Image (cartoon, rainbow over all chains, first blue to last red; front, side, top):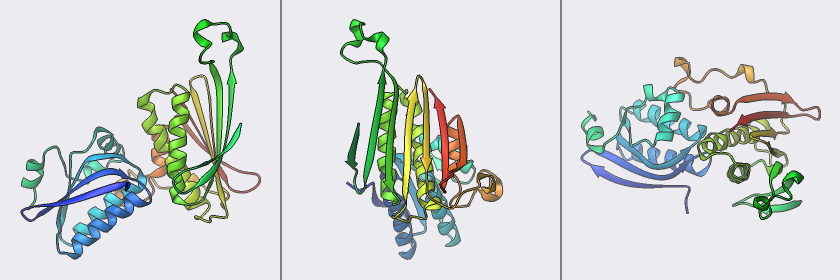
Length: 115
Length: 172
């Protein structure tokens, strides 16, 4: 089984990636990077990462989230995060990245904040 | 006791040393499961990233045997992952001819972890604070910060034979 499974769905012009597994150095981080790169190549620039199924993330995974955020912003898009687990929320708080990312508890709330 | 273990992609030598308390020998409650007073596991991993998961799995099992509570496991696994990743990537530059050695030891309610690389040495004082506003959008540089967050003490020690050892302790 892959370290990180990513399922894609569309809600209007927002692409939602439902992620399940671990975002850690190696396979998990590469899978996230590839997914974001592909979406940008397809012109999909409003991206919501549903992290409800992500039970573990390391510094490489955190770096990949930051890299995704900067790549999407640079391309004129928006990245938002959905359904952080308590551990992931704690990690983003400790690293002060909750001041960078827009994170939401519900999908409806997140979708309404895309411009 | 020494044995060879293979993870998903890497094999490592695992040396397990357990010391048992003789004072509990006659205790009926301890007859089935002798009281472990000290336990050591040593892993020797090749320097490729896939082996980080083997170190993480090993420490998770190890601290369970040491009686660490579940809420400590997440942070300890994180610290070990980061230390081993740094040793492989920044220490050994993913040179598979070089190994990373990991030693776990617990006695009482304290865990000690030492991660040794064969790199050219490392000065942790030159690593910038990743929580500084000017560094927040950097894609790397958070590993040592996370190790220090989740462990009680983190020390970097140059090894006489070359390379660096990072020693971490955690009471639970």
